[in-house]
Length: 166
Figure 1 (cartoon, rainbow, N blue to C red):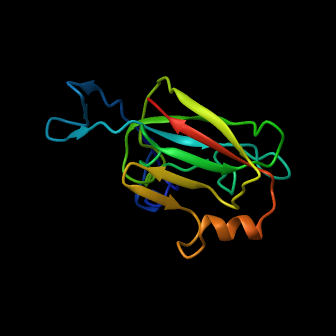
Figure 2 (cartoon, rainbow, N blue to C red):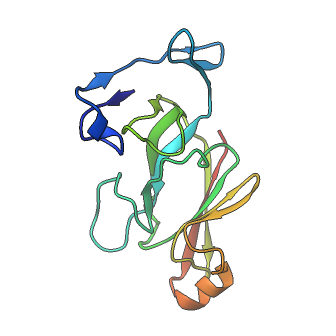
C-alpha cells in the first residue's frame, strides 16, 4: 500500500508519504497484529479504448478505466460500449483487498493472473457500462433508463462483454 499528502480524498490529512507491505497469511491480509482483513481479489482498471483521443488507463469514462470497485471480481460480467474495431480491451491494477474505492490512492495491490471470457453482442448498444454481479445488476446510468431505452437512444453497433472467471 502507498499513500501521501494530496493523494486521494484523505490526502489533505497526511503529512508524509508512506509505503506499507501487507503480507498475505492464512488467507488474510495482515495489516498489523490486530487487523487481519479478508481477501477480496478484484480488478481496479478494466475497459476498452475510449471514443476519440487516447487517455491514460486511470482516466474513467464510458469506456471505463479506473473503476476500483470490489464488484469487479470473480463471477461478474461487465458490459461495455465499443468505440473502435476490436474494442481494444485491457485490464490491470489488481487488488487482493480494498474498500469500495481507493480513499488514499491505494488498496492492497497484488500481482496475479486473471482469466476472462470476451465476447461481442452485435446490433446492441449502451452508452455506459453495465455490470451483472451474482446479486443482480449494477449500472452507471440511472435505473429508470433500461437497456432497451439505451439501445433506442444510442446507435453504436456493438456491445462488448467480459466474464471474469478467476
